[in-house]
Length: 394
Image 1 (tube, rainbow, N blue to C red):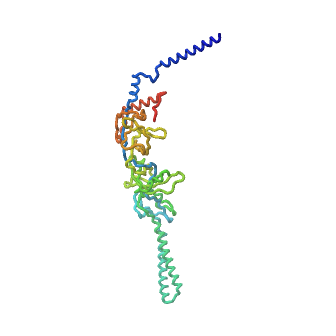
Image 2 (image 1 turned 120 degrees about the horizontal axis):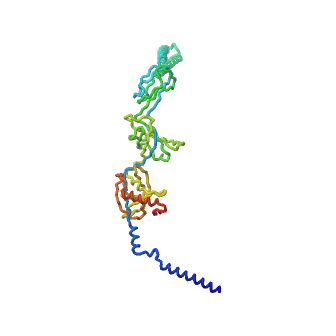
Image 3 (image 1 turned 90 degrees about the vertical axis):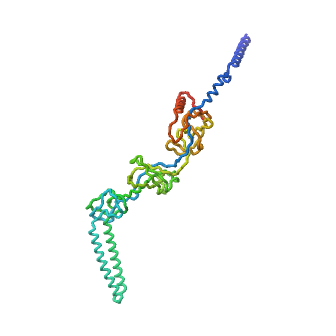
């Protein structure tokens, strides 16, 4: 009885397996699509994507370093007396131009003039004694030692007169160079000691600009390089300059090097101490290959563009340099006159067919066409949907 039951179960299982196998043979597979279905797929794959393009252009794009600095006077000094005394006269007005050598401050010279007169009288007496000693020595009335002492006394008197006249000259404080006077901090009648502040003098044409750059740029900076400065106090104006010195010492605290440049200030509109934004030209590149920024497709640490070649998009890796005014310098990866996609590339993949909706010139600065922007927006919206799969990149 058990054998009969087991045989029945085995027969039922065998019949079910045979039926499943027959059903699988008769079911249409995905590869056995109808001719109409197979015709649709190539047509869909061949649908061209509308894009905007432009050509790789060449333009002057000098390599620059942008930093900040401060304006300094070409020459600057705080006038201070070398002798003590009371101020008897101030012969200038604050803020006015001054020429080199002009007397600005006089100290009371009464004592110094008296010392000069005394020194002159001593000199006269010493010279008279020396002349008498020379005459007596010729007649052998005095010894040679007496004559030498008279000569030495004469030289001492001459030195005393020179010292007194020097002290008298120190009572007049003169402008050491031509420039503009600052604000005085003394008045007539003040008693000043040696080294007391009187007034500052500034030479402001030309002006100096001191700024710092990181030590990594040290080899790129040299004397004679051109630069331009912009000032927040004078928006919209650019002033040219030139590097005149590079400090050989690198600051250990900030790891930077101090550079000094010179800027023309004939109109006297700039002033020492102003904050300056400096743009230093380290290399003048006249024919750099440039493309619009929107053509760059970043992927991780690498950057790509899509070239249009024979009606298809060719994904190309590029190496870029500096960026300026919505333009990117291409160092490697493209050739002059290559046609690249600037709008519509969000849906592109390597080898995809494209149709050019608009060919732009780089110097126009016009944005992409409406069709390309709409295409990008649609692709972005699709990619943003939950579960949407982004287009693969080769």
